[in-house]
Image (cartoon, rainbow, N blue to C red; front, top):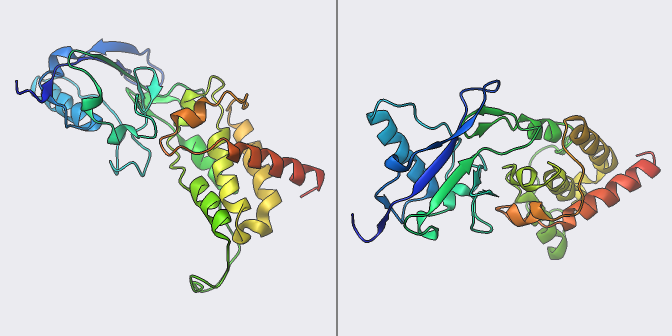
Length: 255
C-alpha cells in the first residue's frame, strides 16, 4: 500500500427492492487500498469492480454528471446528506477527508416521499411533480430576446441566481426531521418571483407548488435549518421566507 492509499471499514445499506427489508452490510474487505485522491463515487466504483470480480452483486447507486450539477448522487454518509464536507455534493467529496481506518456508513435518503428503489437509489419523482405544478414560465415570449433587453438590478439577479442554483438533489428533505421539501420548493418559487419574467404567474405558481408539496407527503417546515446546512449548493433559508410571503399574498389576494 502506498502512503496515499487508505483502508476503510465500509458499511452500505442493501435493499433488494421497494418492498424488501433492508440491512447494513459490511464491505470492509472490498474497501482497502483506496487512493485518498479518489472521489467518493470512485471509491464505490472500485468496491463494485471488486464485488463483480468476486461474483457478488454490485452496490446500486445513482450518479450522472459527477460534477456537482445534477444532484443524482445524493445519499447519506455517516449520518449526513452528501457527507461531512459542507457545500459539497457526494460526487465531489474525496476520500482524503476521511482518516485511514475510519468507519464509513452509507445509506439512502430517508423520507416518506422518497421510497427506496434499491440499495442507495431512491425515487425522487415527487420533486418532478412539484416542479410540474408551476415551476416554470409558460408565457410564450416569442423569439429569444437580446440578453440586455430586460433590465434587472444586480442585487435582484444575484438573489434569483442563488435560488436557481438548487440542483434538486433532495438533501434538504433527507436532513429535515420532518422530511420537508420547503427549501427545494422555495428555491423554485423564489427564482421566478424575483424576476419580471415570472411575474405573470406569480400567485398561481406559489399556491399550486405549495399545495402539491403538501399532497405528496412532505412534512412542514419547522425552521430547524438542517436543510440549509445539508444543501450542497448552500441555498439560503431566506428563500423559505420569500415562499411563505408569496403564498400568503397569493391566498389573501385570491391570486
